[in-house]
Length: 487
Image (cartoon, helix red, strand yellow):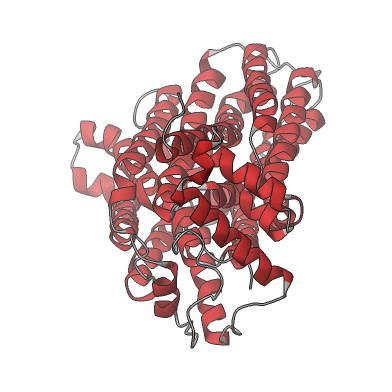
């Protein structure tokens, strides 16, 4: 028996998103194993390589991961428009397989570098293209937001599992597990249809109808006459005719474009500068001898991220975007400011309270990671997709992501130099993380429009784009739920 369109279609969209999220999970896995495997590569007796590597050599592992992620993010937006988001994600899956093969069969640190570069390009592309793909296959912006919130949950789960596997599972078995995850994605995702928006841009009516039927759960011939499906299909075709006749929207005001660029870079860059990756990569340095054992500290921090991402998935779609973004940013900033003050003045304040001196740092750091994963990090993708017109979103989100990955690369590679040469050292990094969170929390109130349960036209008007006929003419596919694919 065929499921109703709204139930069957949502199930198919959820399954397609879950398969795509394996790319984000795999990146988290690769990042999570890095702290544990760095010590293995440096060990004279336990190294799986031909010879042990010094700390300066292993320090480049995360750096190459982020540098190559910037390359993947930079090219993925344009590629998604040219060859389709599904094709870009498939290429990312193949690159991840190469990355795990380089680890499994590698015997020199150069092979490990290559694994991070393959995986980094794949991850940079996946984190840009997957929100695009979700937005294009979903019936409404609300459904797209719910599915986009799952990206953070898969990423944080991958990091947690990677840390657990890296510290407690033999080296070869970890690589086999990573290859298996990549294999599942590569064998499953080809059966997923390309997004209907891609076929609309290429004026391929037959494939457009097939894709739309697949994502709306239309299986029986009788179901093709349902008003919801027929109406959405006609609107796609109407938009296609506008594209074929080169009928576009009115010229965009320069102030509107500048504001969109600022919004895109604000959300994406500040999410990366919130400190998630730097703190997890160098948790041993930030915590020192406080907390529990090094392995347990890593697991607790990654677990806090997962809790935040789970809360975001459950409660996030139903909360006002601006409120969630503002509160999560300011609360994460409060936690990291408290940690910075504690590291600088804590010994003078605690007056010998050994318990606080030992466990307060990991509590504050875990609290900050929880709040970032609860709001700031997932909302960077959600709000960007709800504010920006699709084609502009693909390019801007790609550029903003590439720039933010480059900033992360610089922060990772400069970490040891800053820690040893500048007096506050780690505290300086903590203040940078706090500043980024405070900035996005305060600026989001006056600058960002509320996007939840609002039509795209209303959001664009608030940002300053006003057209005599309507906002983004010819883009109101699915009763205003889908957004413009043509500028």
